[in-house]
Length: 71
Image: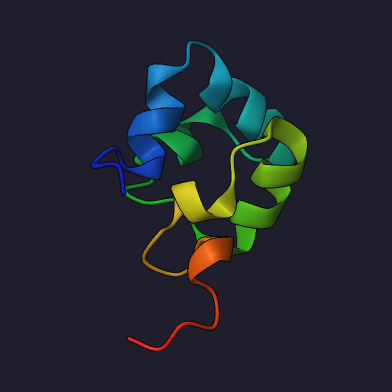
């Protein structure tokens, strides 16, 4: 697993925060205040921008190859 958080990934891509804000109908400032991506927005961001929800919130969403595997 990468050590890059979902928010670091978003912030590293120029203009992506503004595009996400527009897609979600919220302000850029609201996105800038996120410490982590709110889980309810992960499916929307995944569909609109192609960033897998597992990368946005690996603490909540399992990668497909790990789904259903007992720890």
